[in-house]
Image (cartoon, rainbow, N blue to C red):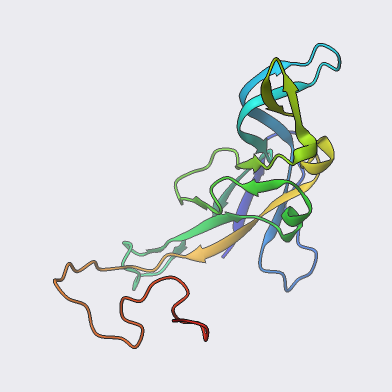
Length: 187
C-alpha cells in the first residue's frame, strides 16, 4: 500500500518518520490558518486578549490519499479501502494545546489540505483583567510554530461491518458495570 502525498505549496514540508519502525508519519505546521475566538486588542502591547478562544487551526500544506488496492475478495466492490487517522504527537504534552477532536478521521474521498485544530488551555499567568472582565493571552511559547511537528498520520484498513439490531446482548463477566469497573479497585 502506498500513501500518496501532495505538497500544496513549494515550501510544504513532507511527511517524515524518525525511525523506520514508527507507526505514524509526522506532519508539520505550514501555516496558522485561523485563531477562532472573541478578543480585544491590548492597546499597550497589541496582543489579542481573548474572552473566548475556540481553537487554533494549523495547515500542513499537504493533501494525502492512501492508494487503493484491487482485491476481488473485498466486500467493497473489489477495492480494499484504506483510510487515515490524524493523531496527536506525544510532544503535545509539552504545550498548552490539545487536539480539538482528539483524533481526526480522514475519509478515503477527502483530498483537501490536512488541517489540525487545537484548543489552547489558559494558565493563570495567561489571564488579565480589563474593565472588570477576565481575558486570556496566548503564550506563544506554549503553542506550535510554523515548521513544528504537529501531528501524525496513521493508516488503517477498513473492515466491513454488518449491523444487526437486537433486543438483548450476550452475558459477559463485566456486564453493564460502567467506568472503572474492570480495575482491581472497583466497588
